[in-house]
Length: 563
Image 1: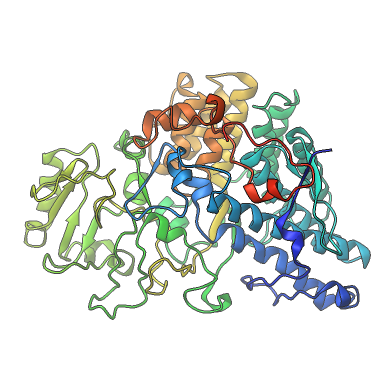
Image 2: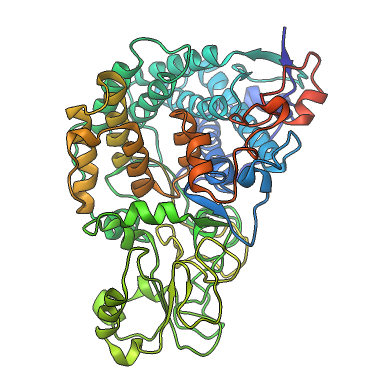
């Protein structure tokens, strides 16, 4: 039987960071665990430890989710794993792949403990259901990334060197069964977005069904089941919040459209540069806004340039002039005087729009479709403050001092940052997990797009039901409604790029729909068809199983195609 070594079982105890709004967590070695977890407060702490693993899995670098896609290129500051960005360097020894593998299996071990002790001591079935869902969600990530994987269902009482290697088909069945079992518990329909609810489970189960519907082992009811689960997750709720000021504005993370999130707060971080999130740093400034000691009023970050938005992302967001999401996604104005290297980036969040009109603008990034007349109109709003502004067009600076285009990522501020995840409260430090903002894992707008895609899978292109769901998302953004003929998987992917850029979903979207090679080689200028091919000319669709896992396995599985 094929077996695979699992890193997580070498250690009998784990230490995890605190989780926002929950009780303090704790872990004990097996020698005292049986007695320790008989206490209700101790078991509650274990459940909180399961929630805290979400920070470990999602709070660090996001390369496994976003790099090597059509909408993000590698910037000049690079990635921990260049291979995830360009494919040609992606090997079984990749450090980001190995760290993700180890981190998520370690999280699964914690969840296994939570399930085991919950059932052993007959604790509240709702708590056990929450943990079962979290574990199933982790397996959903693993099966998408690696295909066939080891299913570890029981807690480990001693180090175990090998586990059976399960086919992806069986992994999907396990995920579906676990999520359905969690739905059977008496969980609330809606709850605080940091706790598991029926709507959150239904959102993810809809995506599980949808993803499986593309596979060779799909079940005939997958699309229908995805629609039913999405219906339950949507729960007749419309998209009514403003995209920028009520969904993504700093401090607005706990809003009614977020179904599930990794909760983070300054109070639960061990210090101001650890235990938070790196999401803001990968897509925007790497220096926080809470420290203005460098002389600017509202903080003066440099742009990080780890991941640079592609021209195609800009084009998709700019193709409808009525779509408010372009301005809500990109930081087009950098405030501050022309002299000096710094800028008052966070003034955007500190001051109302009318007051920002009176600020000096250091750099302006016109929309990728803008004309000189558009820029002249922008300058005319306040000529005294904008006449000397550096206009940085998509193809280079207007002053001619550099020809750096937005996709090059080879200098600070060479492209508009994604501002959706900016955190004015983050500490002033490069590369730190300092953001105090929650990480959205399930958002109502995505649920609508999941249902729309499932309708297309069930009914074919031009599904009127899919059109309705797509237009619900576009309507909130002020975008022009689409016609029935536009309801295709390709349009869904474009709409998902517009709505969900940077939300840890894009690689999964392209892989699920079978568009990974097509879209990456078409829209990511850093990756060619040859780059995506590996051993025996096979495409690198799945990630490589870490080399250490294969080397230490008693009966190693075959490596994934292309490696």
